[in-house]
Image (cartoon, rainbow over the protein chains, first blue to last red):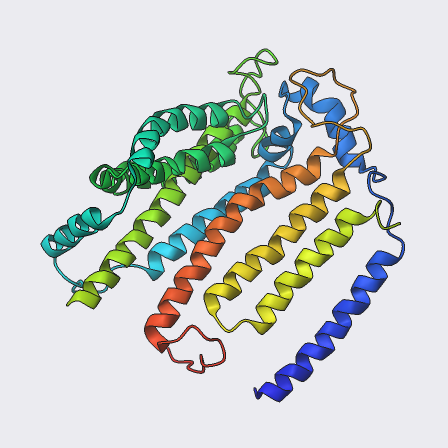
Length: 256
Length: 116
């Protein structure tokens, strides 16, 4: 397609977009005026029906659980896609010894201030506790698996910033990361399927709901939240791992 | 009219800047970031739709059921997307890396090769 025809195509679509915008903005209700029936109904019933005080997560992991399962698999598929695209070439570029040597060199090259080194070392432990706390209390307070997982996945970055390169390398290449990624993704589906064995529909909340406000309440909402937390952590750490491998190979390629 | 609709206009403004970036971009990495910006407009839009005057967060841990709260449904819709978007960005950027390896450029104008 020539650049002139592309400009024409753009102008036509831009005119269409402008028309849709003008139409959309014409009878806009003022902000705060929307009365969504579903959201309102759920805020009234979620605490009684599911014993979950955070309605957002009651929706995510229960009322709308099937959609969240799909979204989780989008995440899973993207991570797998990155792994597939960055898969090691056949025959391999450079041997492992050289990689190790180069990594040590990168390690030494890192300019890290003492203040960063000291403050980040304390941060890692706090962040692990905070991440698990957020993932485990999703049904009670704002948080849940997605948020807790991202916090946990940034722990290796904090270790990296503290200058402990080898510990970072050990964390991100640990087989547990892949187990968390796949186990988390499968766990959600398994929790959904296990409802079938009790004669209920897929993703029905079959686990006893417990006392409202208790950390072990809300049945499958808490379990799914933890499973999503494991998957998100694993997924993001895997991404870090493959991108890092790519950087190392890039540098190796330039050196040789 | 402007003030009561401000969040909707802000959402449109972010969306259009993201779109402008994607259309005029000369660099695939820049283009992916513009797509991320474009997508954040949906967060502003969804949160604006769910807002209720005088509403608080839809978490009944320390407030009685029946208190006026904002719509939890739109929040649930955007919540998962924030994380999923990050991994989709990672996937797009990995494609950019491969495109750079294969074509030697990240300028979409010069990416004219279509080989298997």
